[in-house]
Length: 142
Image 1 (cartoon, rainbow, N blue to C red):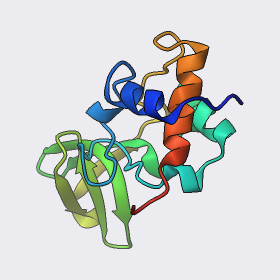
Image 2 (image 1 turned 135 degrees about the vertical axis):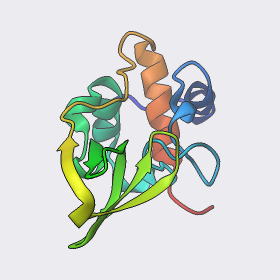
Image 3 (image 1 turned 45 degrees about the horizontal axis):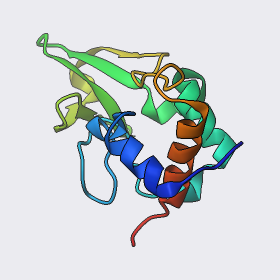
């Protein structure tokens, strides 16, 4: 895996790759997708590259989109952030935190494909390497 330039990757994250439209870093950005503030400490360069090029294949089960329909017909779609015996908490597509009591759930479906688009057709090989470098530099609280 080629690792490129961090500064260029940061520019791509906010610009051409459009990662910042869904992902949060160090408290800035939306909550629609997983927070990437410490992704560099959690993933290898190969895992990051795979996630960028083949998001569905690299998607972790906890990050799969969930659609919940409650007994009263209300539909919620988002990303599960926690689940216990009695409830499911998710961040909705609009960025709101929602808690649903399991006794109130009529249906709950988990998607098997990632909503994140691949950057394979958007970025060059060098740009992917730069984006990987930036993501590797994200190691938590600074």
